[in-house]
Image (cartoon, rainbow over the protein chains, first blue to last red):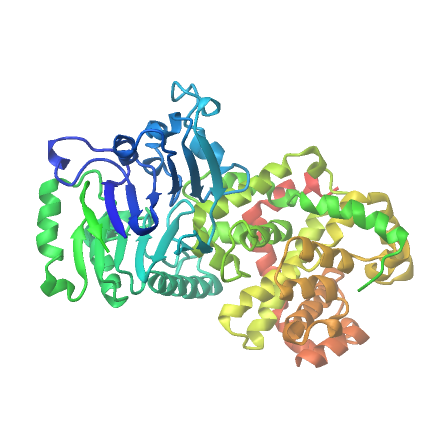
Length: 305
Length: 302
């Protein structure tokens, strides 16, 4: 299994000299299962445009372009590249797009394909040449064929968002973004007029159990790609509840769950290359990370599992 | 398997169609819209709001446990649902029901008073939770007692909404005989609200415990062994709530055969229940202030 990062940035594309090293494209990951000639794409951020062009350049003339795209959720930074994915304009393309949506009222097709309407884009969804199936994804275990298995789990983000655990030939690649540690959202201060003992207690138990389930979800992964948008200091100061994780606590959680390699991912748009280099020195030192190999994901990087 | 007569089937067919799009109570609708559109509203407020509308609470639990989310661990607690799926997801669920509330069908409530129905549901929930506390039920399970009490009479809504004339006859008959609404419903409809409650529980795939509460709160001995304690407690809470609503004195209601049987079964006595009276009344008042019901009562309680 080979994993290639085509976009590692969160929130919004950030082109410029200060982000050239780690990359400014938003989230897109390619997984290659060479033995069975399968390719799976995770998320359709702005990095998807580069991936699409690369795939078309590589493809032999006359072959059918067929692939699956798994969307962790439908926030803009994870779908913005979809209209610019050139294969959707080619009649031979067969695409399956999987993803969660918040509520029954709008379909995945409407949410993703809605970007292809004249108000946003010069081509409408109905005019696309490719054959595209949209499939709602929820929590569960799925057989994707060719020996690839997928397990999904809801994460903690302001929008319904899925973690993805792919298993193939004894190897595990797991994503856990966008997410932050589950927390008790209810008032716990006894003196607050809104305090409710039952809510406070239930909230505490639920948060603890969900964090435990998340740790079990990525336990033993050969590669864990995890949200690490903030430092602990930033998170504690003003970013709680924004749906992104502090990098220090991610490293600790990955170590506790015996993760072999941890890719810190979904970099804050304000984070410069120089800062990421400094954080690498500070946080990714093997003396600190023990048996878990930790790095900040970089656009164009390939990881062989 | 229960066989239905053609008389019952005709009612049940109409009820099934209604249950699929059952609107929430008008008593909470304004607050739902206000809270969901306010970015400052807290998870505590959201939880409280859902917990004060039996239809909304049931619908949220239905959706959360539906194949749509396919959660591996079924959720019977609204608190847990908010932690697991997040405030925004739960808000958007709640809003989708509030939109149903805007449909013309939701503006008429039928023969029952919506405020009285709401008050009774919340009262039973609060009493059941208080009794669970007295019986030292573990904190993590106490919310089930509240939600069970809140949902117990859901079966009345389709009957009342779809068949307002028949419901008026039920109320008249129950009044004349001094008997219960359940018996009167059986006479008029050939079925009662607990049967309809069971149908709602199946349609919404509510947990087996809540399904037993809706179906057996008038016949708690028929509940599954695992659910018996909760069903009995809700049955007792229901009976005690009615005595509070009718201002019955302690001796009168406690001498009621059914109440005595249920109290003996759960190991509580009338004096213990009397202790929760003030707590219950205070909670109902707080809920009314929260939902601003007193100001709107005249508009809805017709």
